[in-house]
Length: 240
Image (cartoon, rainbow, N blue to C red; front, side, top):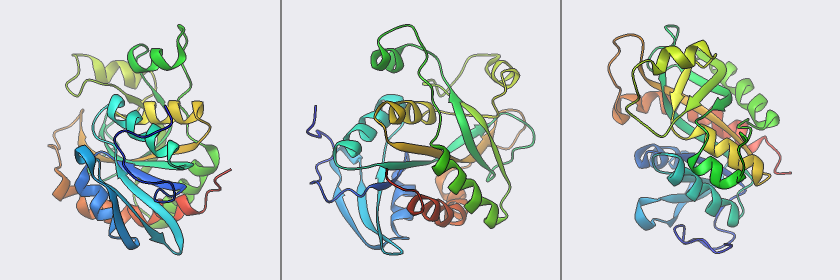
C-alpha cells in the first residue's frame, strides 16, 4: 500500500525528520518547540504537526499505544517522506539505578517473536531491532550535554502492559534495563524500510522499587528538559 489511510497529509507536509510519541499531550508539548507548527492531520487521534526547528523541517506525530499502532503510523509517515525517526517515549525501569525522570537510550530492543514481527519477516527468525548508529551517537552526545541522568543500554518491548510474574527478573538476567511497548517494532520495521530510527525513553515508574507511576503532567518537566536535545540530534542526522 502506498496511500496512507490514517494520516491524511499530503507529501511535503511530512518532514524527513520526525519525532513520534504515544501520548498526544507529549506530542503537542514538543510541537510547541517548533517554529510555526501546523496541525497537518488529526484522524482517529493521530495528531501530526509539522514546523521548523532551527530552520529545519520537523514533524511530531502521535503513534498511539502498542506495536500495531506504532508501526501503522511509522509506515504511513514513511510513505509520506519520513527518513529519520525518534521515539520520545516512556518506560518502566527494571534496575534499581533508574528513578522516575531518568532517561534510557536503547542500544537495541528485545521482543517476543510472533504476531506483528512474524507477519513482517514471514519465517521463524528474529529481525534485528537496533537503532541507527549515527542517530544514536547524536542523541547520546546531546543528552550528555544536558547533564541529565541517563543509561545507554538495551530494553525489552512487549505488547502486554500488565505482564506475568517473573517478567522483570527474566529480562534483567538477559541484560535488559527497562521495558516499553513500542521501541522494538519501530526499530525493526525501520531497518526493513531502510530509514534511520532510535528511541529515547523517560522512566515513568520502577518495577523494582516503590516509585509510583508518574502521569503525563508529572513528566512534563522531564519532556521539556530532553526534547531540545532530541530535536538537536534529529536535525544533525543525515537522511541518507
